Structure formats: C-alpha cells, structure tokens
Image 1 (cartoon, rainbow, N blue to C red):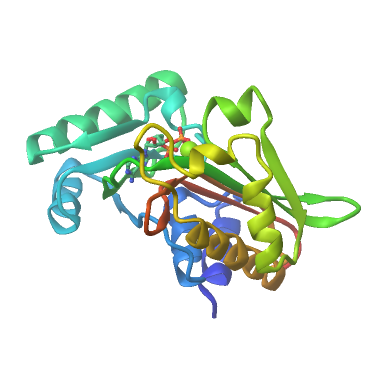
Image 2: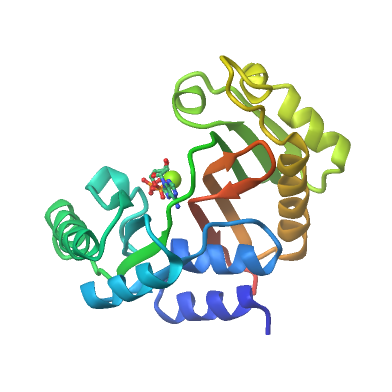
Amino acid sequence: MSTLTQVTEQARSEGRTVLTEIESKQVLAAAGIPVAEARLATTPDEAVKVAGSVGYPVVMKIVSPEITHKSDVGGVKVNVKTADEVRAAFEEITAAARAAQAGAKIAGVAVQKMAPQGIEVIIGMSKDPQFGPVLMFGLGGVLVEVLKDVSFRIVPIERRDARQMIEEIQAFPVLQGVRGQDPADIGALEDLLLKLSEFVEANPQVAELDLNPVFAYKDRALAVDARIVVGGVA
Ligand code: ADP
Ligand code: MG
C-alpha cells in the first residue's frame, strides 16, 4: 500500500480531508520530493528526544487538524537551540494554540531540523473544474499575496514548461541572485515541479497541495511546509 493510501485512510478514519504537515511531508518524501521531514512529539520530553536525534537548531510547530495557518496562532517557533528551549517552546506553542482556538484538538508538536534561509518560493496545485490539476509557482510572501505574481500550467508538464513557469514570473531576477545573494538552483526547482506533476497525475485523490514555502538554494530546493488535501476519489 502506498504511503498516500495509508495516510489518507488514517485521515478519513478521523473524518479529515486535510493531511497534517507531518503526513503531507511523509507522502511527498516517498514520492521523491525534497522536504524537511517532521516528527510528532506529544510531550515536551518526546520533543527533546526528537530534537536530539535530528540535531539543533530545530523548528517546532503546532499539529492540529483544526489549525492550518500555524504561525497565525503563534504555533511556530524557529531556531530552537537547546533542550530547555524545546521544552519551553512546546508549552508556549500548545498554550498559544489553545488560546487562539479554544477546544481545538491538539495532536502534539512537529519537530524538524531548522533549514538555512533560502529564497522563499511557493508551489501549489489546485483543481480547475474544466482543466483538472493546475500547478502554480511564485515567490513567497508579499509577492504572491498582494501582487499575485504567479504562473500556472495544466498538469502534466514537461521540463520546458517548468522552466517557463519559473522564468515568466515578474520576480524571476530575484531567483537569478540580487545584491550578492546566491542565485537559486533553477534545475532543482524544475525537478520539483516535474515530480509534483507526476505525483498529482498518479494520485487523483489529491485535491489540493501547497508547498509554502520552498527554500531555493544555490544547489538544491527544500519544502519546509506542506499541506495536502485529499478528495473523494479513493
Ligand atoms: P504556516 O502554517 O504559518 O504557513 P510554516 O510551516 O510555513 O507555517 O512556518 C512559518 C515560517 O517558518 C515559514 O514561512 C518559514 O519561513 C519558517 N520555517 C518553517 N519551517 C522551517 C524549517 N524547517 N526551517 C527553517 N525555517 C522554517
Ligand atoms: Mg507555510
């Protein structure tokens, strides 16, 4: 059974269609997509154990089926550097989530390695009633939210399409490196888009997918947040 099938069955048995970040990343990693893998900790001590095995510094995030925008509720702590900080962050994250959303079911806290800062891009997939799965590419943050500086292609795509998606956004020069910043590895971003295209084509039960953000480095790309929504098709 594929990882996606397993994870989807688990989610459905709990009445969920939105996979958690941990589940989404498991599925994507199995499909060969580079992600910062996250592990669930249900207690502060467990979080310390996970942090010790992935290595400091870590990033910690709330895991709750009812919370999708984790930082909006104070549910993300980056650059957590010691066991004491992990314990404190665990308490702060869960308390903040409870305060923001009383009664929210909290599964625990996801612990992952802190990735070095890269150029933030976002990659998504949504389903158009007419055209089916459509991939989206853009630079992260304000550029996407305010300026809608994004490109789209209908799945499946070829490498040439991936290249064009990346080159046609207004902010493309940022990916080529500005003010002495390293240029992004465009080939790695193409690979990621191609792998996602294959993944959504092979898995029609994936209704929606967000990698927000993906860090683009000079020699690779890495998704540090992921969300998959599964639909009706089994
Ligand atoms: P949200 O649910 O709010 O979108 P994210 O998982 O995207 O939460 O985390 C918020 C921000 O924290 C990201 O935009 C990114 O800048 C940073 N971040 C998240 N995960 C990592 C990581 N593994 N390494 C470094 N920075 C991270
Ligand atoms: Mg995010």
